[in-house]
Image 1 (cartoon, protein in one colour):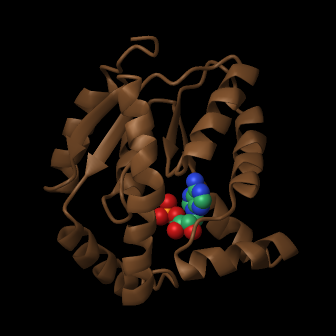
Image 2 (cartoon, helix red, strand yellow):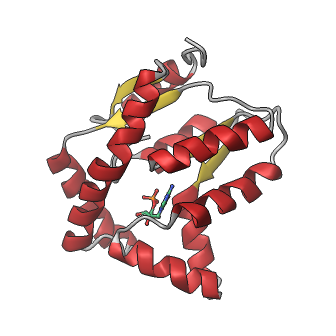
Length: 188
Ligand code: AMP
């Protein structure tokens, strides 16, 4: 977990690279849907362009479909999901349905100024339609309002590891590996 621009996507890819784990990025799945030009894709595009969250029912149904196809023995790194308390509760039900459990939660964090600067840079590099200054500010606000409570939800379960998202990609990956290799027990 972590705010927009903290490097979740880059770091999740580094974490799963070469070890057979699976990487679920709901943002990437949504960007794929938008490319398909379907009715659902057009609906999803409206949320992404505004920096708003896609509704929970759409998001959870998409995650369920994805998870259904992944063998139970495969370790999954969720990147950008769950982002609301309702999604976290739905995830608990999904995991129970598939006989899985949360092994640990890693929170990558960085100050808002840094995030804003990074997202502004990425807007130019990747031409993402959700990286204009207004949309960036909205995405950071939405994160604080809707996703911080999810962090607190997992903190109450004692499963959160905090990782400093400042530094080079390699430095952050090394910190993340240490945190992910030592997941807190679910029933702690
Ligand atoms: P990301 O690539 O993770 O930054 O996600 C890009 C955008 O996809 C977000 O700003 C949301 O509009 C949407 N999105 C990604 N994951 C979720 C989620 N779990 N719930 C709702 N919307 C999401």
